[in-house]
Length: 168
Image (cartoon, rainbow, N blue to C red; front, side, top):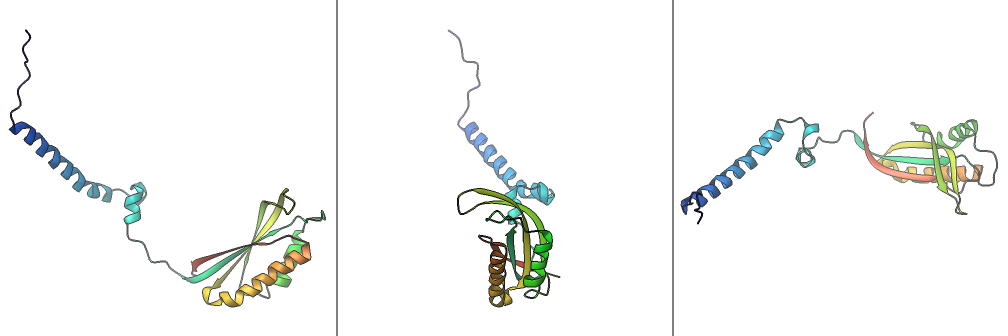
């Protein structure tokens, strides 16, 4: 008959092991914030970075409006040229927003009224104005959109408005 050679545990040993495990877990938990504090912010886990105090946003509250102008004509006519678009900006946009604007070249696609995917060169017009001027700016922006659609036979001009903070 084989004999059991394992040491027998007395009732005090399981309690001692349990106490050692609890103490180890507590020490590891307490040391984690210290270890994370030593890491650079980009090396920290996302939860730790999110909990870091945020800087106060600089600048004043503004609205950023982006208008997206397509150049393909739905009637199959020639696309709107750079010269035509810049003349439109000079005639319709600059008088309404003389403080400044940005125009970027782009390329886009959309589904037209007939369900066809249309791909075209495009322009993004970016306007920045203080939130206090949003009431006065809205009709001017709508006049620009309407004039472009009418002048170049477009189905739409997309408009995107975002609140932001700006410092010049």
